[in-house]
Length: 306
Picture (tube, rainbow, N blue to C red):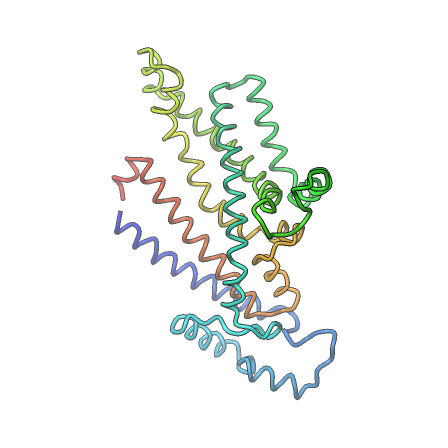
């Protein structure tokens, strides 16, 4: 297991290096720069600003210097538009995005996993059809439709809930539901498929033939193996919830990383944009590793092969 973790960490470092390299040169190909805006700036002033931020050198030199500064000093640079350190901006906006992602993941697990289990146990019944119909709707309906519906139909009718804001735990409910419905739908389908595969195994039929109570068959014999596809989905899903939350953050006015990602793209702020990409990439690598470790814990055969 230890060797497996080390190997995955080294692979993650390679992935982050490739991500940094591709993102750096792709961002460089964007038209304009951070100093191009509505207010005209003299060429002399632009030259001074580019020299200050190290943008007066060729792309390869900039890439090498900034990569060295990132590795040695863990410095992502300074945002020309906001005139603040990128690391400080991301540290301040990261907690709301993570909190939103965690709450959305909790909503997804609380809805999707029980629905999938019950659908598998009651295969081809009205409940199964209704649950999978809900899952299909959850996959098809986008967050920018669900969010305004919750704002107008629920938040405006319940005084305790607000249309926008991020000041108290009650403000987390509607954004978490908005963001968590789509992964809940995927989880329901994955859990149902995993449970059906285990329920058809010989050892489950043997347990039933011996008179083991149905609830014990589910909890003792099928749940661990049936949840493996869902566990494999949770790691990337959590990273996707954080990285794809900028729509929900915009709808509910949440001060998370999504707003900075959009602003950096519009303003062509390559320092902030590259910092956001690296943060999201690091999360995906880390959470994939966590999901693999949990899978190994749940699956003895996989654990023995590591």
